[in-house]
Image (tube, rainbow, N blue to C red; front, top):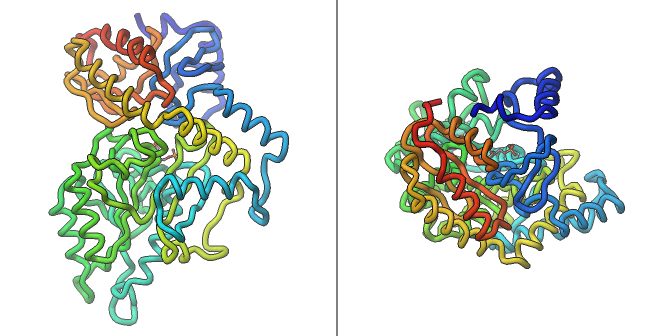
Length: 429
Ligand SMILES: Cc1ncc(COP(=O)(O)O)c(C=O)c1O
């Protein structure tokens, strides 16, 4: 059964029109979705899907959660937007809440943007300001601009700064030259890090001090690949020795998804390592576009001063109300714990279901990927869609599963019942 055979008439018509008027950066969408409820979503032809992608780890509370709808509607009726010449209650409350949930020290501050890329832009800009304070960056004594180290296979967004720290050549090469002084070290390899830090020295041969290392604890877009915990500890150690900052990009891993409010709080990912900055987005506002960055401690936060960064929509009250409702439900309904328990159930059930296509499953909480026996992830994704389950071909040999945090035991059983039937002899993509 091919996608063309089963796609409904309204879907076909609208997708034809989509292509006429949209830049072709996403390819042709799979379906035109109309509405959702909980973990389920319907297309415009009325077909129902169990959504194990959640808008790519965004819809923490699923679709149309009553608390979220109420909060957004009430805030919309009060005031949807104010400029940054003014503040609103939800914005202030949200910043305080995020600092608390991150366990960030006294004096920590939040910057709000509208996406993950913007959270990372803010972090990279703050790291640049920090870099200027390092002794080795002083031109007067032969110093060089501070460098930022990013990891191979890392993904931090598509804007020019975030893209400069994003590894995948297919999405960055065509835009080079990008932001200078951002270099890649091999993910998981401490020697590559040692090497980069050892090139710091002053003078002709030195490359300049390192201002920051930016990384994801689980490399999401690379196929949900957790970094080894010993490596993460080594990164922190080398950052400390060299006065460099550690930026942890929690755009995909944050806000409960991995079974902790932030992935860095998981002992099995960091062994207790703490960041200097954390970036967040996706799940924070349960579907409202919002992102940002938390700078740990007052010294670092103080490097941003009036005019040094900003955005019209930063801290928008509608987004803040959506985020407060999302965080409130996650807390009240113990959804962080649910992510941990349902994630374990999902991984166990996937491995026990006996599908020969499934080689292994990796991830934490509700951010997981099934490693396939051969590279047929697009065929497998399409097959699942035809059978009522949304999953994502995150890599040629990996299917990403990132359902809403409200997912139930029954939903996991239902999803695995479909996954189990994916044919083992699908053609390679
Ligand atoms: C780890 C990580 N960082 C940053 C981004 C960029 O976020 P956005 O698409 O909201 O700009 C993503 C998006 O997938 C991501 O997974």
